[in-house]
Length: 129
View (cartoon, one colour):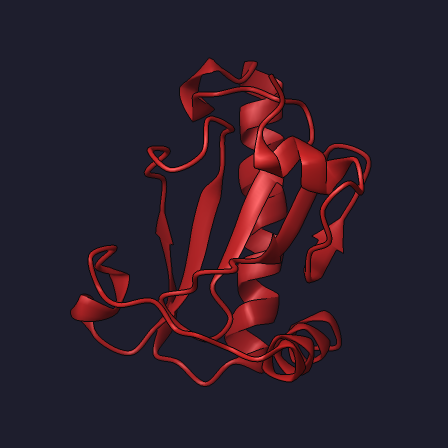
């Protein structure tokens, strides 16, 4: 059974896309810890990040690095944090989260509720940074 992320890759579910190439996709998290919280995924459906082929693993992180730099330019923050948790969706993914304090990367924090307009503004700022 395909994951929700595969459905996003296939265009079955809409997403606020930040970056995309033939192998990877970055899009805004719909339950963000902070404005600009972005998920980076391989388009190939693999459950565990450490099960990716070595070359795919390396390229996923290189893609995430480019996205993180764009987030850091577009979203006011001290730095962009990174987390790989993998408990929520059975599809390898990296969380890129703008941080201003250590507590900002706590996944038990209440998630932000943003309007479609806010998502679009954030998407535009990151894509065009």
